[in-house]
Image 1 (cartoon, rainbow, N blue to C red):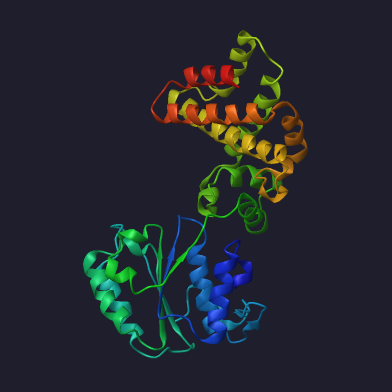
Image 2: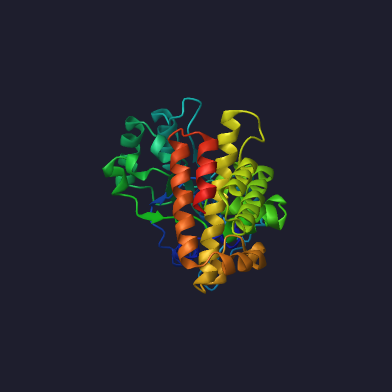
Length: 336
């Protein structure tokens, strides 16, 4: 897991790579940010770069080769000097788990240059576990690095946070998520773009989504924007609303289907706004639909697209408050 294989987070990658090259990595770090955006992958990349037997010199600093025995063992989770703690079946990290790695971290590494302790979902540590870790953070072993990974860092004790420099991970861009889906998970470009646009910058969320459902929602949203622009009469628009609900045959499924379509609508309208305002094309979540979006931009001028985006946002909130999917769909098509 070299730094070069991680999507996004260029500033953090460069910072860590430079610190490794200069041997100035702090004894403890806190990787903070929403779930599924690559924090644990970055922690593994740090472990590899610190222990790679054939490290690469890059413009930023040092990176792992990803191919030596040490890198491969770290990638498989089989390196004796890389210790990972994560919540057990109870959903928490117990004090015994923390004490065990603290005892092991007190000794020099068996094989590598640095022992790296990765505590995933660190906010799941019970207070006793955090207190036990605090003593080690106050007097850290010279050959060990502790990396706490958390999507809720404020749930950690303030004394623990104060001893761990925090690196804030921002959500990935839709283009970065799509790139990983195509490169590492075999997605087709169109499916990857559709899923990435709905993933809120989280690769983990993208991988949990059904590409078929999300792509279908995007297709339905695109068709709605194209057709509703040509319809002025209310009866014709209400007819269009039927395509947004009712396909699954149950209220719960209708709500889920409509929510997915509304999220796709919001994302498409945002892209239309980027084109209308001549923004950077790299900001487009649906870059594979740029020609279609350009056609929509000719119809959905600035004020109209802004009003439509607001209507979609209100429709999503109405669904969250348990409004009828049919009523929401009918209302929305009359607002567009």
